[in-house]
Image (cartoon, rainbow over all chains, first blue to last red; front, side):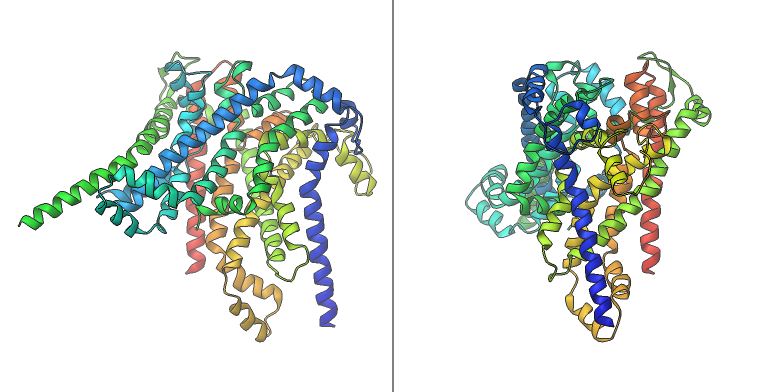
Length: 272
Length: 298
């Protein structure tokens, strides 16, 4: 009897997981099948590969200045990520390694600021950028993201595992504080940097709302914006949209499969 | 005495270096976060169109109470929050506890598959979902093929079903993300607690309810707070899948702020007032969630 219940429970678990896995993976399958079908077939729910892949690709590459768009996306995501890691890890290191009077109070107020919604910042930030004549520039996208409270927090947590003896030894060797950070701390913490890079790069690559507001000409747009723009027509060409969606997903998908463990560590990192 | 001076000199040097490391981040946060959020508060008392402002006192707050579009956006946002967040977190808990069984066959495959949606960009998955939920699209065909429905559902043309599409989409994208947090926390629970309960004859559901859930409380609180903050700011999906339609049935507060500021003739002051509604909601709900978590512990 109890064996039977266990068997039923086990079967139910597998059914649930198979269903969940199917639902999770199906849209990826649909996106790839869609890239080979005409827009009309996609809307009609054709789930078999079609012959329109080449036409969709041609349409995509003739309507989008891909080299320029890719440059914009990689520059904003890449340079932005480097800046974020530098500034936020400096702060995380500073908060953990140096005692100062208001340290914990300031750090606590940073955590409170973590709950400030971006929706409440976008209007004043936009006016600020307009006043600074920075609308439609890379720096307008990158600057507000550079100091990331989440990443500061992440680095402070990770720095707790950084041996203070290393710093003391470096001080005795006569290294200045910035040299210790650059030549001792950064190499020791490289796996923390790797995990943070993945998280920040992904967030920058996928950012939609702020670039949508600030980037206004076609030659400044990111891939994310271009893919979104392809659907804004009254009758979008979904075959072309699917090609764009694949390109937009590819970098993060590749990072995920190459660095799966680190990827998950990075996501969990700030909470531990 | 000489030692005391040397020490205070060292302590001061320590303080100065500490501040130097922290300063770039603090300055940037001051300029791009604290200043805008305070400016936004000031702006919410300003009326006027475009860049022409004048002080309006509580005019914007009065306008909120009489603005049917705002009230609809508020109701929609809270509906998404109240329905989507619990569904997603319960599913995530369910999957995590199923995957926490080390004897489960294909465990890492299931985990990777369920986690995979979090790797997609919000824009890419939104446009893919929009095509799946077309009137004659694949969703209707599959559901009709399985005889779950008889006639196609007008997913994106009906106010109720459009909400269902948005809720399904967000749940699809974020369930695996939350599951990973639960799974990590479950793996930190001492297995001997379960063994002891098993020997005492505690059934599986009771072990889950009386051991797993209480042990996961900090993580559940964390995921509830971040999901609440995320859902209150919902923008990408609604802008790309339904554009807030049909007839504003999926309009969210964030999308309304965007429309007020950048799609219509800009009304920045009023948009700032609406944005403060989100700030206040985030504050209140986070506070309640912390209280609730503390109460149950006592």
